[in-house]
Length: 404
Image (cartoon, rainbow, N blue to C red; front, side, top):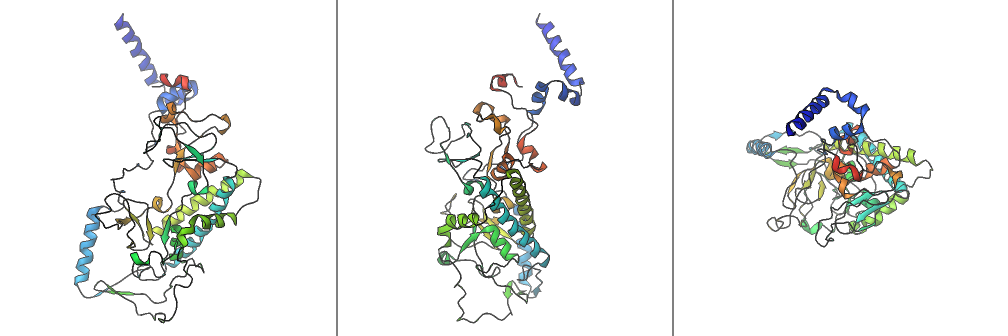
């Protein structure tokens, strides 16, 4: 009796293997579930523990090799030829890209500030998880100190700062000058890091003055020599610097977005424009970062645009006592400059039912700003196909136990 059941199961398995996948997709949706649930969100960034360091863009061995070569060059007293922007001059072909990135950021802020009026944004008051759309999901992933025993989220109303988190950097008047010291932390203005990148790449903003050289600097035996005429000592270079700008960063962000509000009833058209602005800003910033260095702390979200990090001792991450509060600087990526806040992707907004915890492994994820545009009707690019998991058929709650 038992052997007969084994033979029957073997014949059914042979039939499933012999039938092409193209035929299965049109015959029965249960085969799609069987085939699609194998895929996973393998392109999502790994969630690091507090003791883990961010992955390095350049390996330790390569960094040590570059340091040995630099030390050998310094020992020989001769001029080291520097290319823009290391010599203080601008990369002229990147100046239009810097203007495009700044314009795309302004367009992005205006579209997001309009769409948040029509789409609900929720954030957890304990773990700061974000959800786009109403109602918020019921997935029990709140596992922080003070959370509920059921690990359910405590949702409160969110805003634009939860969809587009603000990452700030110290504004440098001279990008190849000395780093900002700890005593100067209240004397130097902090501005959005992507705006600082555009300023250093050639986009001029009157309220954020920066030094534009006409003659390059020279490097002799590791020492930078600047022959360009400097400003007189009596000139006040800090007259336009807001000494406490970062205290009002939320106020400044709302002032910028309120002045850029769009007046249009076509929500889908606004979402499409916002999606294009997001892609243009990220791609343009990536091109700028290939030439203009950006530093980030390996353990905290601090970012400094420039060839080296600042010396402000305000790091409170893993083992900051061993570093005397200083940051562990390393090369930054576009995700450090524009951090994507990943949220669960809601496929059917008209259904009106929240995402449940039992089916969480079938849900895809998207950056919050992309999810906001997707719910407003904008098409999502192919780069997010694997994280959206559109190939996975979400079963009903009663069918979940039958899915292989």
